[in-house]
Image (tube, rainbow, N blue to C red; front, side, top):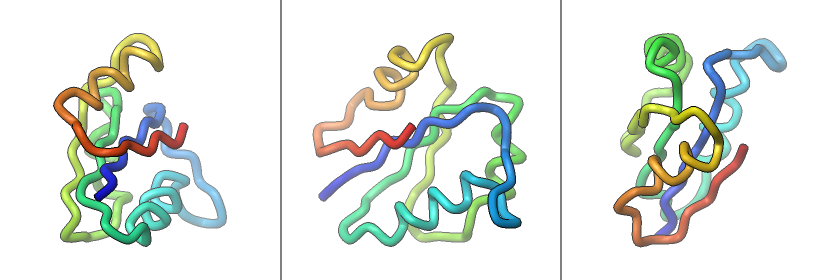
Length: 88
């Protein structure tokens, strides 16, 4: 079963009337067999992003973003042994 790692910036940019993160998460939630979504994000943006996300039974975990994309991916992927999808 795939796990999904999602990395975003601290900004919640609108796209077609909703935050872009909402569109991405909705698409990921339509993935058969999805077990978890991990979001690499700046601490100060967690509350706003959480509010923009849909209610779901799929666990969504927030991981503190590093100073660069590569280290953020590494931090969010820690401990995952399944396949990972990383949309950026």
